[in-house]
Length: 187
Image (cartoon, rainbow, N blue to C red; front, side, top):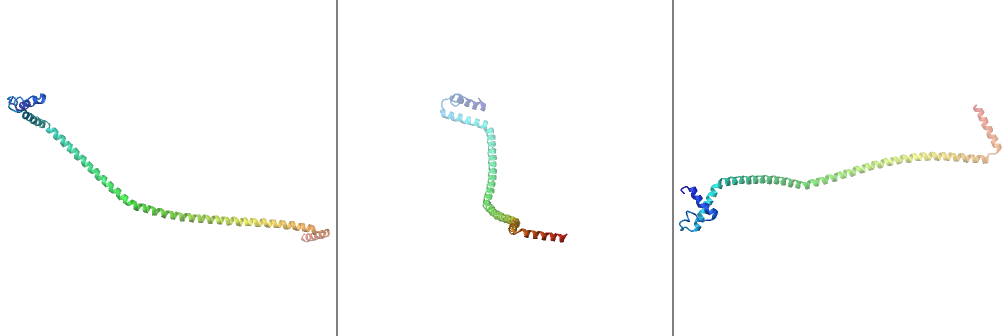
């Protein structure tokens, strides 16, 4: 039992597995039980530290690097989100003026469209008026020609009726003689 590792192990193992008093410290009967348990706990913790210090250091170093990386990524994402938020705020601030400009442009276009439509309607009305005027003139000329024809036909009919009523057989012979004389002069 001169080896310190065996000594620690000898002190630790019985307390660990069956909670028996320490062999060396509790053998003479003068050491209280709580002291032997405290020494046993200290040995256990020292052994635990000695065995786990390197893996724990690596674990915590890795974990710290992951946390820093996550924080850096979160900071970058926050900065990107802030930049996007600033851009959106700027666009929202411009939105009022853009809406006013769009509204003014729409009103200008509506006025221009109304004027264009009125001018086009006026041109169409003038075309219709001119076409109607031409149709009226043509209808007037046709009606005048029909009226002349009707008047001539009526005058001829009326003259024929008057002649038939007033023409006597001696007038008929005299008229026939006159037509014959005029034909002989022409021939």
